Image (cartoon, rainbow, N blue to C red; front, side, top):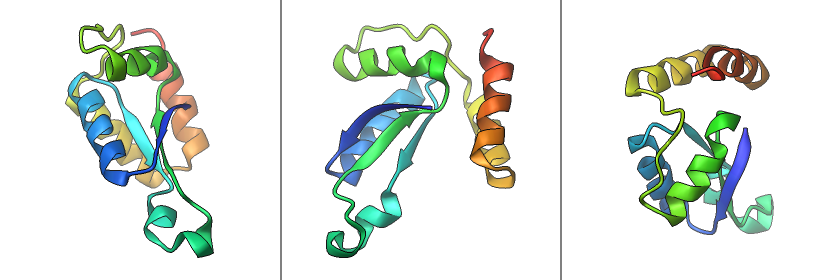
Length: 106
């Protein structure tokens, strides 16, 4: 996973995530829970938007600045749902390794 961008607003991060998902880029938003709690207790002032697959990172960055960018390795909605479902049953490191090997040659 690679960090695409950090946002001060959870809503802005979610909008960017949805924009990327529509183009076949799977993302993950971190620090949601910490952000929702008091910053005084958690220290979280931003949420991070991450590209789950490294081979989609550059395309994701371009999409957020240039709507004309074409995704080189898009995933279908079904593929994204399968990966998300698998992530609920496994640790993130296992998911990332299996995702890499499964999708790196798309």
